[in-house]
Length: 173
Image (tube, rainbow, N blue to C red; front, side, top):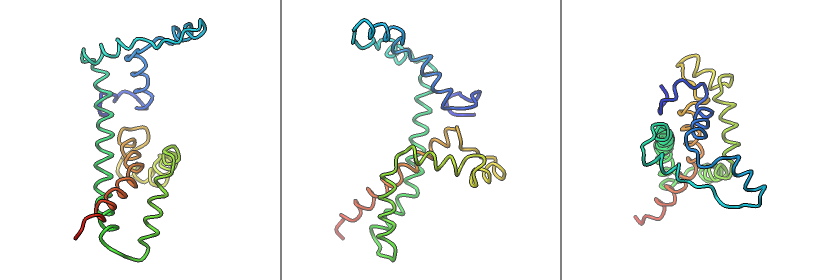
């Protein structure tokens, strides 16, 4: 079961997008088009969004739970690997250290779309890693909340390593 009750959806991102559009009706697209055509530039009323929050709308809170699960999992994954690596880079000197730091800094400049594309190639069911994980462990990362958490962890990983390394390098001792 996918977190948030989206187990019936084949693609979590599409289902989430549909739920957001269907349930959080901040504005009516036809009204905006009509206002723009008439020269009106007022923002639509967001009272319906506040109503959903206050009333405890189940779909809205499912979306929030899904977002929290993805982001907290991503941070946990990145910290588990990033903390030891950041400490290693800060506290030791070894051959290739500078190259590793340059490589990690280079990853910070990659657009998330590029990282996502590379992950899709590697972790897709036809990709080398994805095929192996599906065949042997029945794990599928593509279009799942775990895949989103993994992608988010990989995107944030170099930032965490750098922050940990710089923080540890400033400690006198």
